[in-house]
Image 1 (cartoon, rainbow, N blue to C red):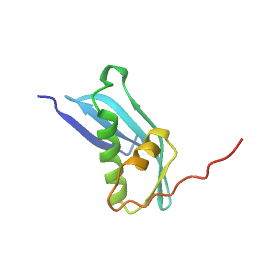
Image 2: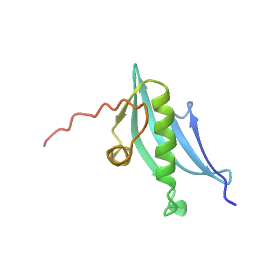
Image 3: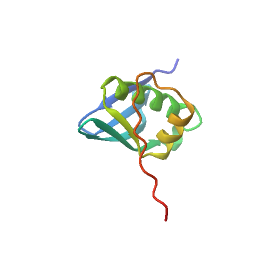
Image 4: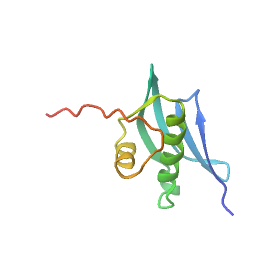
Length: 100
């Protein structure tokens, strides 16, 4: 049986997902007053195809929403997740899109 866990690592400013105790991926964030900005999400290629990015996003966003801070999805994966999934209690602050 596989043990999958998501935890917040404040020292590294990221949420981490582990599989059987080994780091499988992370979602980097940057805290600002009243907001948590998700910057980058990555799953190790050895662990891809198992739905881990979705589990990581779900748990990280639920934790961020519980803090009361607005979620700012700068990371394309987190933005896509938020477009297709409800996160109870989350205040989403969409970044302005700049046209080139």
